[in-house]
Length: 328
Image (cartoon, rainbow, N blue to C red; front, side):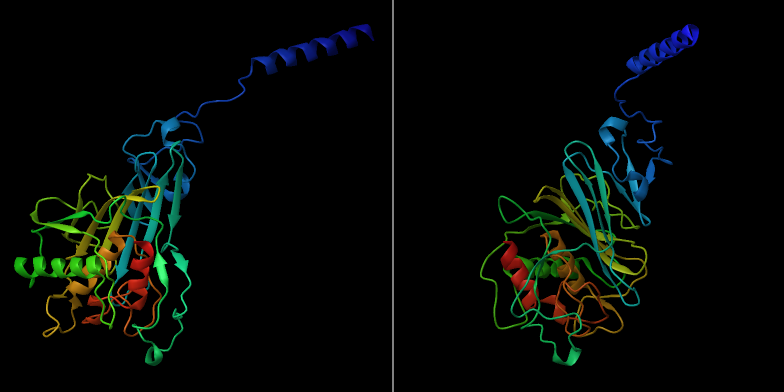
């Protein structure tokens, strides 16, 4: 019995020493389960959720969100993609990749839920087309970020890569008019905004928008830009925005030029996408507006789906305007 008791005491002592020697916490290493191994520098969204890019020592990491591969922003910054769908495309694309100040990653997939302020004139997505009035319906649909402390920003307008049938003169004129619509709150109704956002344009810029064909957001370069380039999947326009908390840092817009027919004139449009309508929509995203409800006829400018030859959306409707007023 004494030998048995002594053996038990020895075993307890040995176990105690082992526990004392064990580390209380371990810092994540690249081969740790908390630090998944990227494939060619890319992690799937599900694998990236919750990782700490600082502890894992990742550099130049990219995240694949349902086929859109984006560069992970620096700590304290969130990058968001919002896109408008063309004819035959089921739904718009949207996602965000946030890295908090401690380096923790959070990924949100799908068309992003806006901040919604109920309006007494707000319509419903089920409102019949015949009864819908774009000058009397629509709520406040905005994202939680905007340009601060001043209202405006500078947009660089790229002058190369234009699609067939769109001249440089027409392109510059269209962006100027789209800018004016958002900047001054110009509507197709009997009321207007009454304030100025001070959006400045730099025409003939050689800056390239950090938006890829797969709707991935690249590494921000500190310059907001708009230009043409191919976009996959029936998307007509896509906007990447970078923000720190609620403060916008950069907004880049890409317009699709992958064998898409564009119209620069409302008078001669035939089975083509109206360029000014899409440019105005994407500029809305660039100042923090979210998608409005889809009504099927006479839609608001920030409606998520575009149709050929729709020109009424060149100017804002009620919901678009109250969203700007609420935001700025």
